[in-house]
Length: 198
Image 1 (tube, rainbow, N blue to C red):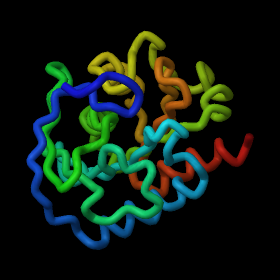
Image 2: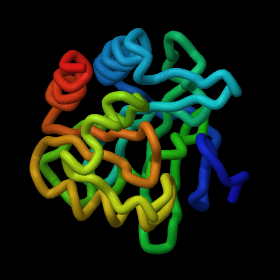
Image 3: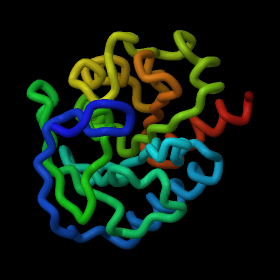
Image 4: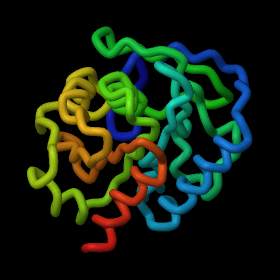
């Protein structure tokens, strides 16, 4: 397990450092929405150099493709900056991934949604303090004792993601917001609506 703290992987990661075949259309889809989120400042990097925000799409029943760890500071991602999560075990805090980069430190949160709702095919995790403060305990909110990247947070997210699209506020992860939907456009529009209403 790597160093604990914001932006660092807390689960036990089994990483196969080998490129995987990323379909060109899937890459273009991911990058187009990732670029929009980056330009809005919903994905990026803090002054201390720690990146935040990520997005993913379901690859098949249990696999998903997610932006890589420590990529928040990169304006436009390349295919090598995405990872394929091949399997996960929330109970035992383990993730198996493949790619030229490690899967995001929020992979467990994405996994919890995909596992709990078969109709969800896209997940976005952003940071925005004003949106977070506005929606805290207004929309479904995780227990503040559940820290990001932990099984406790994953269990909370799974509990709250029974609808086919929505927003979850991460109570124990200041600024952290997750949206999910049947496709990436649905997940993105949910966030954009909240952002534009500030």
